[in-house]
Length: 123
Image (cartoon, rainbow, N blue to C red; front, side, top):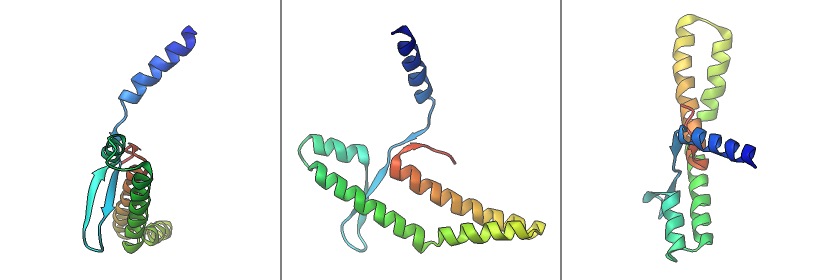
């Protein structure tokens, strides 16, 4: 039993060092009117009876779809692919410019997943 207690204490200490981001949820209220709330706030509203768990999950689902569409609209995946191909072809100036675009696209993709699941910031 002491070993498990020691492992859990080590785990708690490790978790304290992580940079946690509370996921934000876009509340879709129309084509032009989107607000944001943190997922923890929505769950708190659910615990208070202001929202049902089903409503929270539906809001989260719509938010994920909205953010996924934003990635598509910004052509993030295409920029990642184009950047990688240009880097493989070479040329210092081109490589520098492409790496800047690639870094931007990776950051956008990373931010999407951090917001989607919360957790550790990798940027």
